[in-house]
Image (cartoon, rainbow, N blue to C red; front, side, top):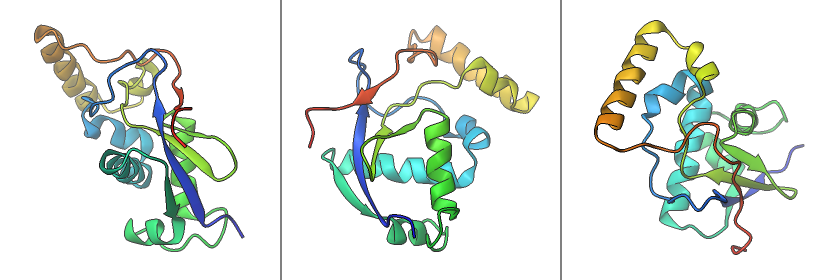
Length: 153
């Protein structure tokens, strides 16, 4: 039976990027991550915004509150959602039972964007143009890899 508790920590960018809310639109990551992983990411980020210290999460409760059912097997939806966050670089498995989550998410890569529908790609290009005109450039998708914050815990 898989572990039922998770130690959640904030994943900090080594370049010292601000830890404010990401300015990417959630709708652009939704078709890339899928609904379960997106919802899990938003919930974990919200928990870290309320209390940035490491937190112990009951995965049974988290899974049920997200509508993902139980987490009785290693193939449960919540574990698949966590794996997608790790796969796309939005979370990182640290020590046993510990997950670091980005609170600031970079823009999707050009490769990730190429898999979206043409209307979504066009709408996202519009977002980027408005951001550029406003002089508000977000972190590049290919920026340095963040690390877990060693000062916490």
